[in-house]
Length: 484
Ligand code: ADP
Ligand code: GLC
Image (cartoon, rainbow, N blue to C red; front, side, top):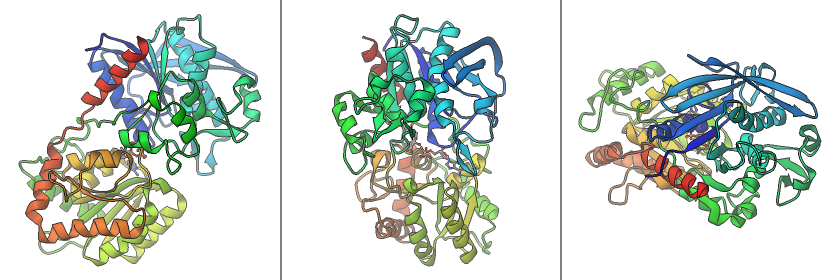
């Protein structure tokens, strides 16, 4: 057991206040798990207009940062989540008081370089204003990358002078790329505008600030940690990552087992667990009812495939669009809950219009419905092109909803193929519709011909432990190794 440490955790989204994907979940649950283990954790995040903050207080403190484009000030608001776990919000309406987190219907916000430079450096200034001297500053994704540079350059000799930094990659494809004029706009030192620093094909790359200047790097599954060192998955940063391979750690995310618990989920019409799955049949009936699928005389025996996802190329939506009609023709039903790329939204709406008998598309972001899709589906599809970790397959395992996944990143690390002893799901390797159809076809075969074996597999998945405990311990050991 490592002695209590002080951790400053910086993230651009933190559930339940703000969330566009898994980062929000992680930035809530990991600090909570660490604080439960005795560490003092302060999470810094923007106060978005859309944020839900039940009991955030004005701390009476504020921060001021001087940039060439002007002095910027934010008030610090504090929500005390649990003992030793506080969330500090940077309240800067000019930057964050907008409808979206990163952008709106017309695209990414044009001043994101300023908004997230302010978050990154503002988090360090907030620690000073709150008299919190962290042992470790834990940064997440490109929005926080500049904090690693600031810590290495600007904060030596301050109360953060001894702090070590860890930069976690949640998704290497989003790098925070800006024209090089941003160097001047933000007053960044030109001597770091080179291939070993922030420069990336003559642009500024905020992710590279984290990769180059943090004391250690991590990503959210062991397999993704290996994959991103290859050309296929490295997003042209594989060389940078390979150069620091010995400092790059792959630590699998956990899930919030309180929020995602089929025995006590307020979004489900009936509880269930691995010993008694009868509640799951009620969830399926409720989901089918919500979807408005044709109600059969007796309980439907068609297998129901669920999907909850950002609609982005990463998630293999093109494979879904090609494979779903075939699975529907084979007797399955399916539902997709997702939002994102307009082209995918339209294509899913078109499929729903063409197959009202068996398919529904819910376009939008709806956490409550996502729980019902997990609870009410028989199988869960995740044909990702790449998947740093993925949370939904772990929610699915816990909800007895057998995952059908592409063997990449965290999906490879969390799902064991049905053909192996102790299998928990169906996996495929080749990123094409036939690959997905092969795995989906096996799922259907087990559904119609090997139902007992499928139920045994379902129960096996439900018994697995995906709580944050072991991941929090791995982070704790990594923090301790940095502080030594
Ligand atoms: P990513 O972060 O790449 O989107 P993850 O699987 O790590 O993928 O996390 C996605 C998170 O966002 C999960 O908690 C998932 O349930 C949630 N989510 C994604 N899309 C939606 C949606 N349309 N409605 C509700 N929740 C969603
Ligand atoms: C990213 C990844 C996802 C991961 C999440 C949380 O959004 O796409 O795979 O689970 O971050 O780490």
